[in-house]
Length: 274
Image 1 (spheres, rainbow, N blue to C red):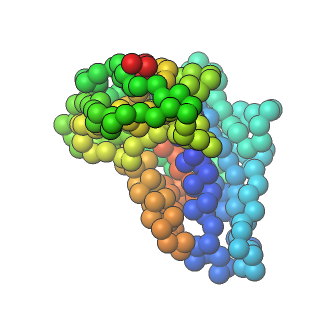
Image 2: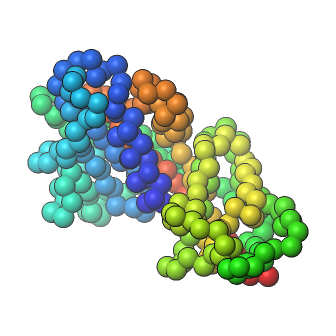
Image 3: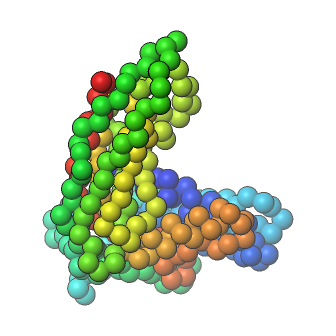
């Protein structure tokens, strides 16, 4: 799950570069990154992007010493700044519980301007099932060849979606050592090959081919229910990567980035040698 968030943050920052706002000199814009979820300590990352009219790249800096509040049902909770990581604010008290269907807001002042955003926590996905939780693949050792084409089989993911909500499917490799299915294939980035995520889905069905698994071992098969702003962020990031001038979608007032939420259910898939 953390890999998804880190990847999104990198894309959010990339999406802040080379926009029409670069025509204005010395803009200083706060960037919010927060993904709330039931059972997870609320954590917010605050950075700022400087725009220079005579440079291609932007400069990213952390925002420290801010007074950051999460608000739920008229109750305000001040976040604590991390001693270990710049720009990270969190709340670890027992009186703030992230609950489905509740609305949460973030508020802080930046250079005499109020920055804010709101998200509604989605419900946990219902009736989540896999068509199979064991995959058997031939192990191909270095120097060996596999005779014939491997059979094309799929694992089907199903859940209930009566209200046309958005979902993501995430496959997460659980092993510490990568055990390749085909030792003849050189994979420069095993983590990227072993972990993959769907685009937002407004359906109750998803499938993956078993040949997508590059490594033997155990995987988490995670279904994430996400709100609209989370899905729109994905779509706008894809668009901004296609044309360098597109503005990245944001739900932050007087800032950039994303303040959103998700809820999950998890099953496991085991990939074994035949």
